[in-house]
Image (cartoon, rainbow, N blue to C red; front, top):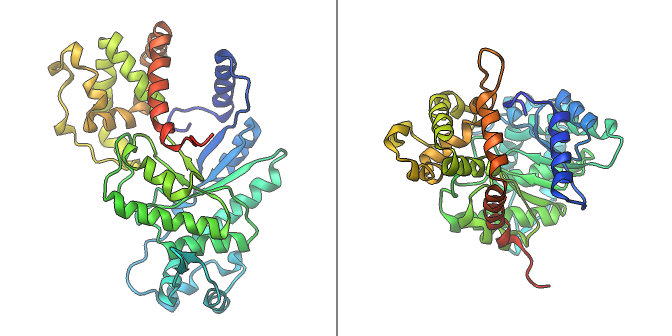
Length: 366
């Protein structure tokens, strides 16, 4: 919302009227994703959002080497309603089974988990208590630390879940930082066997300490791991896609409005150096062609090729908020007009693409 300079209420209004326009009569929910401040919670509550993803990632600490007593004492123990000695005793007696055996929680790994995530837990609890105090209707809570630098180990997951539970939190979904690469708009990068083993461990912890769902953020186009994720979690999983409908919209523009698509592509490339800073991406501009080098009938390949796809993906903010001297967002308006002129094609493309994401998670036993 911030990147598109929008307010929660306008997003909710558009989504609601979109459901009505499509003839949907079933239940709907609205996810306030990656909230990092109290003010964001209040604005989303006022608009009627029903799911809240609390993101304390800015409070996760980079921990190098052996954790010293001084580092440990720097934690916000008063907010954690705890102290180092009590924490050590609590985990000495804790048993969580993973792969049919108790998960070892060595003291040094516990200290590292606390040093890394202690401040983040304190902040998450503050956000959670504000949210649950102010909410005047039923809500669901997710906790996400997936956009941090280092993967979340199984011991760190146990530590976070145990402390949040001790401090009175209830949540339906948790997104750790996984091993491997969850880059925007492309398939999983890494060893899928190691990913499956790690995800299985996280899912078993979620069952033992919850149960709650394991959440896959930046889940768009991770086709190589969907069946593994469904198996590892027993389908108790929250798949989050990002930018799927926008990239599908660009496919339609490439097919039917080549001049408009070239503008979008060129602007995305210009904005990439700045836009990439806040995303997990590895696309390189020098691996993408100038738009003038690509004939009209090959423009669609720019939406599917990994480097140009990522560049288009993270360029949406620059594209959709660009204003001319009169304050008109011409490119955004033109893209909407193009989609309106090709509704059937856009809907078919969306159905195919989103269906490809959902099919591996479908329960076919019925």
